[in-house]
Length: 266
Image (cartoon, rainbow, N blue to C red; front, top):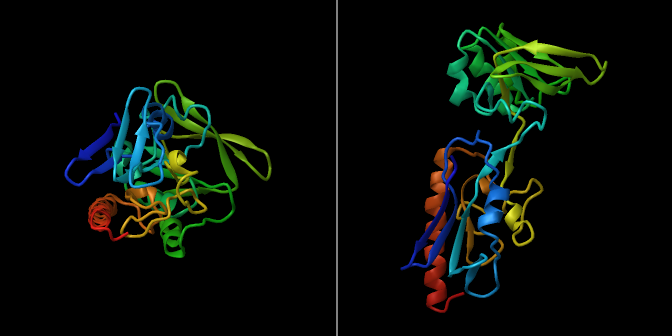
């Protein structure tokens, strides 16, 4: 279950809005759910304000920690079999498929890492990619090709995740020949990227071309008094340890901002 965190620090007047960190392989739609509960807006001036049907919240600073969601395939069976063989985290769920067959969908670094990791647990691993070459770093590709129990499935896209009570396979189509076939598997691991949960702020803050909030290590965004932390901001590495560091930096930045504004130093 996902939780929305709203913390009001009355002394420093800092609000932190986001969701509890942890595994991102749930099916909770932050953008849709948060919009229902918190249709907030950044207003000019010193006050950051959120307006609900019955309540209005104000603070001098705002820290955003909405996180990111795994990009989905949006194919039949993906939602119905979530947690029943469909996963977005090989290191989280890989142990459940020891000595079994797994499919990894993707062609980037994460997909390659997942395939290599699962090869140490599973009897067989299929790596399905829509192109005829991986996008992963060369070193990772070499590790993939060195694993005898990893079978590459090139030029193929997933059509349907098969199964009723649990995953039994993946239906795919070759984009060059049009041929369709089924891969028998016990688990399907989806590694096709992540999507930042920035729909709520896309018209109010500067975002990069991938939808992440433009903010450096200090969490400073394009709006004065608004800070970003965690997977929602532009950064090279998205892990729990970096998210924790972001949170500390964002709070420190908010405190500095409050000190400057309270002392007339804008």
